[in-house]
Image 1: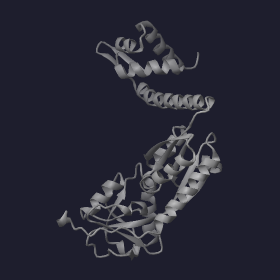
Image 2 (image 1 turned 60 degrees about the vertical axis):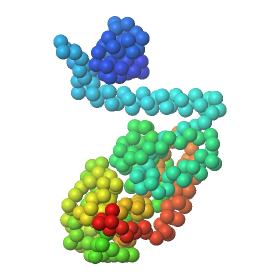
Image 3 (image 1 turned 135 degrees about the vertical axis):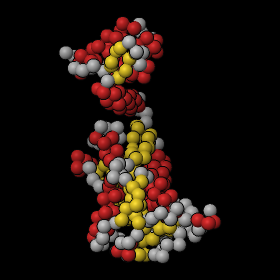
Image 4 (image 1 turned 30 degrees about the horizontal axis):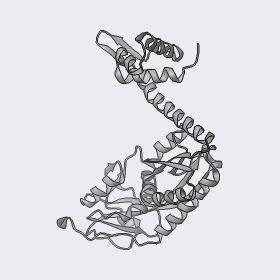
Length: 312
């Protein structure tokens, strides 16, 4: 039994998209018998059918649906790797695929990458925003060359650096009784909380729950929401408050005020990790620029909006 080939995977993906062997053959500029042979060889190598063939047409099996997703990832990584090797062999530009969490993508990353492009014109940066869990998964499958995530990646202990400790601040509805420059987290014990969903943004949820526990209470959760924009929208609607990254306190969403928490009780470490094929010198330079940017941002006053919901 031979291993699957890239050609078999490419043929499989076209058949999976068309769900018709004849149309797939036409797209591939092949006769139908070779297409069928590629699929049979792939199914034989995997030891399971990828398609259900019946009188009503062709459908993917569960194994086929799984293989479709993984084959896309594998071929994309192969194509990227082949392009990078070709560029290097011609003395052309390198490519670094960098994934980053939302707060860094909003605050520090754009200007930092602009600086890196000016310093290293031979590097092409491909940027993507995501949640820590998805970024860590993508890093593990080498979909990303480097990632900026919350927490650490044990597998990258020797190729990662701490960027900064992200301070969470309170996002409060306009006119809230505690709106001000600084508040005690314990004073929020009787408030309704809007928190990040348990999946896939569980890191910030865990930081919020742990901070509240240390302050002596369990938060009363009104909503779980996926994404900071939705959370701030619910806060603006007066439906609760939330703990969010200080990086998003520059939001100009009407009806939201931000306040620091006394003693900085809610902190989340942010780390840059990279694979061995990426230049450590370039990554450490990127990390230093990000540190400078986040330090400068932490010294600026929090943005507060004074537009009431009636004025919107």
